[in-house]
Length: 269
Length: 261
Image (cartoon, rainbow over all chains, first blue to last red; front, side):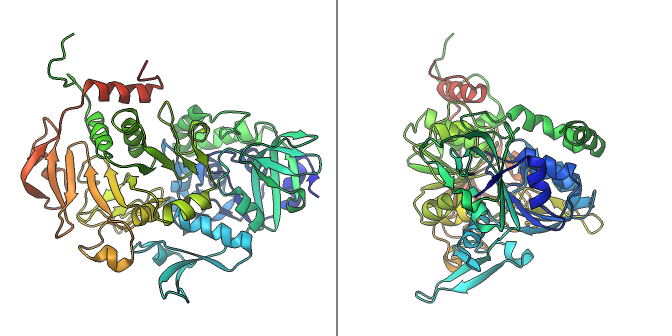
């Protein structure tokens, strides 16, 4: 059964220097508060996995906690570039960042293979693209039944997956709904799972199209209301699009970025 | 307040591009929508000539009906108004890869004469590091698996290049037969709509040809803004100016109001 813990204790126990960490949430339910706790605790040398790095990984990369990024689309959705990500890749600031780069379909299938505890997944993908030239986790495999050549992508099995959800009960059963992204696969692919939630309830009321992660698949649950901000939790908050737009000028400048992180993350609790 | 020609008195080049991109969806039932310009065009089509157009976003929504343009592909309204919401692996495997979707609508950073796309890196010369772009996202498989592909982007020599620095997404490869050879299911790009006009692949060579210009644009302007020697159709058409109804619907979508109010 998942333990209900403080965010600080759960992060300290579950996430260690050098770990491969997936923090998922496809625009919705992005676990920002947990990322900020990783930064405050000074955990470093992480391999970060995420389909859409978004502002959450821009912050982690800019603070120098990542040595490697596994991803498929690294922008500020609807706004433009992730400037800290670009600065790390182009200029090595604050440290060099290795990349393993995929398409969305490839990344989604890597998580499916990870959750299924298979070594790889197959898809019709990457045909004619230069992407396989730069990745050691994309290959081809011949279908034993039809002879068709298909793309093979290596499974992703993070040491830790971190997600945000709407609710959990006191036994640590987790419920999320709305855009559920790839969170179920990312959680089931990982050795350890940390979930932050908007609310802890006595009983989980069924919701349409909800995903439930049974408590025995989750390592720890932390009660963190608004823990996805500036992303959102359907039923609890709306996406703070103004923040995503405001992030662009903050993140363009190294000093402005560091000042923002000091004020809003390092000196916050 | 006379409107005898049904032509709007003024519009921006971006509006002209979006209106024409929306028109290009005519006759399509389902559209896998990229964020940004493609999303504006697909939403405008649904608000004007194609009210039954099914908008599909890679965040996992089938049949979204937003009242305002979403900033991201995961805005809450896309899920709240959808016919169905599915997981990301499901949208790519069961819906896109299975070949169920009519049109993929993509933007691009760099395009070449065969409508191949680069959204990964820009070569800035031997003494400078590669410039970083966002990456592939859904595009390689959208362009592979939808029955056809539409593209919309602003026209400049920076965007329309002789040679891509990186092939993220295959349009027509290096010419006719390449898509079939690679096992790509759909017919690939059928039109590239820009703020200057419309390019379409030659049925025999698959090379993009200028087939239409927008009102007020010259053929020379388009060839000047293209980084390769652009082929021009024997007879270049001129697109219809945006109507008042199209412009009103587009501006309402952008401002978040209801265009029918």
